[in-house]
Image (cartoon, rainbow, N blue to C red; front, side, top):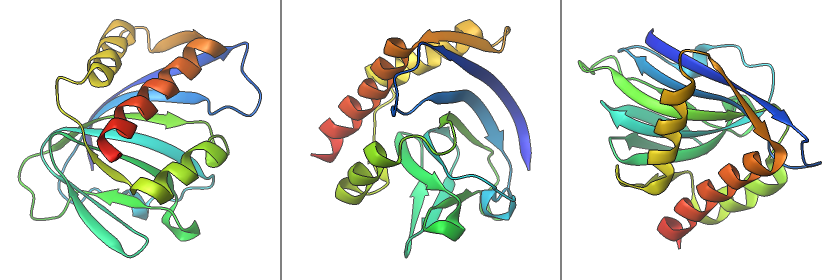
Amino acid sequence: MIIEQHLVRFVVQNRLPGAPQPLFLSYARSGAGFDLGELEIRNRYWIFKYTLAGRGLLEGRGMSQALIPGTACLIRLPIEEGGYRYLVPETEREPWASLYLEFTPGSGEALFRPFLDRYGPVFSLGAGSPLLRELLALHAARRELGLCYLDGLEAQRLICAIFGALGRVGA
């Protein structure tokens, strides 16, 4: 079950053709028994998710890995189409707090898939990383309004920051 969630929706103007488009930036706290795999997901989409507190579990493509504070994952949903799912095990007492960036359905496959195939879905990314600080600041500044306008180039700069941070870790 989702205990708390604060969404910031992106409105991207002057989109760059073929580029991944950020859709939501969200802070969420999920309790024991939450399982994204149980939700009906109609579209394929990519998520960048960072664990702030608690513990989640990532499953898919023959693997299962704990998502603990300081870890990030870049995954495609749904699991039925070769993607992943994340959940909070029934045994967890502490809620799983995460910050996640969701991309518009259908965008990002050509860019994200080769990266995922090369490095895998889970990365260690410190709490002091510039990317995490930027995402937390962006969420805090727009949380009340729930809306963030970005130019296409700003949106792509955000994508590049993700790849820059994960590429340094994955290399």
